[in-house]
Image (cartoon, rainbow, N blue to C red; front, side, top):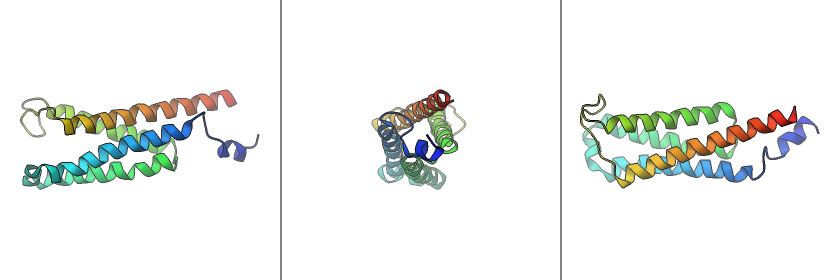
Length: 140
């Protein structure tokens, strides 16, 4: 089997579903991030926070492309790192006296949906990376 034949075949069984699921997960998180500045007007009281959520949402919506187009490992790792960073920032904001906003936050349905989308993206993308690595090891 030539290198071109291997590239034409899916890297593992049902791989399309994993990539679509990862794209949907990041899309959900991105849509929620875009919704926050408009759904919660108090966010616009601090323009930096509004810009952060708009930028985060745009980045996560953009991340649909690397997943559906299968741009490769660097993009997958960067997506995992970015989503992990968003999760860490969110967890920090839950503690009173935190360095981000100084007060403790609460968990609401909007945040829960966003965080679940981000965790799902990380898990699905890690699964993709693991399965692709296993295929490469078996081909040797």
